[in-house]
Amino acid sequence: MTDRIENFHFHESQPQRLDKFLVQRLPEFSRARLQGLIADGFVLVNGQAAKKSGQMLESGANVEVRVPPPAPSGLIGEKIPLDIVFENDDLLIVNKPAGMVVHPAAGHETGTLVHAVLGYEPEIEGIGGEERPGVVHRLDKETSGLIVLAKNERAHRWLQDQFRLRTVEKTYLALVDGAPPTPSGRVEASIGRDPLHRKKMAVRPPGKGREAVSEYKTLESFKNHTLLEFHPQTGRTHQIRLHCAFLGCPIVGDAIYGRKKSTLDLKRHFLHAAKLKIVLPKEKQARIFEAALPAELIAALEQARKES
Image (cartoon, rainbow, N blue to C red; front, side):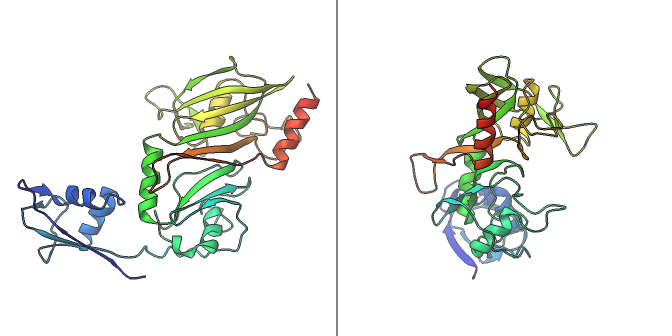
């Protein structure tokens, strides 16, 4: 892949910061990414390397930006089957199975969704970060369902903005032990690191964690369980699992935040990213994508019905 060269002419009457000008001209890149290009000498103003991001442009200035291809991640793609729900030139929407980690981390150097995507689409390497190419959002290892991966920087930026501005509508299905206090409701409970167990998250007092908001409604009630539909308004780590536990109805099979032994014949937690409503790059109307419950969750649901 070769460097991408962009040339711009600044003709405003009032001086403007270089990085602010470039954000307007190259909206697919974050300001931090553009500031990095400036710092690394990839931006020329009137033929000279820009001195700093805050350099003021005067009317008549010519700006050249050289964008190098994504840096190699060093990750090796693997031939792992992918359940692709949708694909175009900008992104992939994958139905991730339970048990698959999204990106490499300690203890998970191979076999991740990123490795699978790199095996399928090598050009995604380096998009959005070397260790997490293409990743826009995450799902827990044992959570199945829809996840979006960007194929290029412009799409990555577009998708990140939608998640940041909370315009993406996500729908999860959760089977819980017991029942919530009300059939439907809204949970506002901040989430942060558990002060006693650093590998876990916890509901924290105001000011001690980050804002976390979820809305839920009951889809079906059983003798010992309830099937809930969740709509997270924020995207905190383990948010739905923690909010279910906070409501007094932990997710079936969640040994970390719920009961140590599953109340049903299930070797994972019952949480599935079932639906995603999102506006794709170059489009104006939102699309809806869906992923059916996997077989093991359908079986657990049937077991809950039979016990009622």
